Image (cartoon, rainbow, N blue to C red; front, top):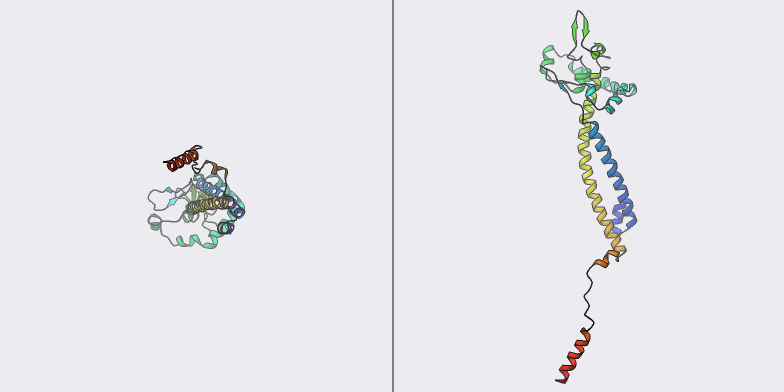
Length: 226
């Protein structure tokens, strides 16, 4: 609004306020975008031999993201969302063959099944920490597994990357608008103060030499005599 008023009515102070707000918005958005790109630069799934889906490791993600999902209060909120969305209901009826032929989302891969590396021998599960956290109970499954937290982070990472692309496009637009505002501010100041110190450097009107008028007078007199 300030920019519109300043540009239309040549109000320099309104344009100045507009430019200050714009530069603050650009700097803030640029900082958030860079932070998002750095935080989401790590991660991604690991191929599972003989399977279509991927599995995810918590240690592959940025430390800042890992700290978020390791916070019990934060993770309990996420777990409640997963339970209420009934994400794992989709694969309840899968057969053994389905696990070899069908794909999963990162959350399904990490939260709805035990890791592929887990093995059962004599009724005892082996294969790592997540294997011991797994349970057949619908309220438990692998919701406390590191693989589940990694699966959630993968979803966040992909969404955040898309948001960063949008932020970059918005940044380009804001910078273009800011540049137009700078031009309008310059024109407004010039309209309010036509003379500027830099105007001294411009070409001035060429004046005749000191003897021009004397020579002209003499030439006219000479023509009158002859």
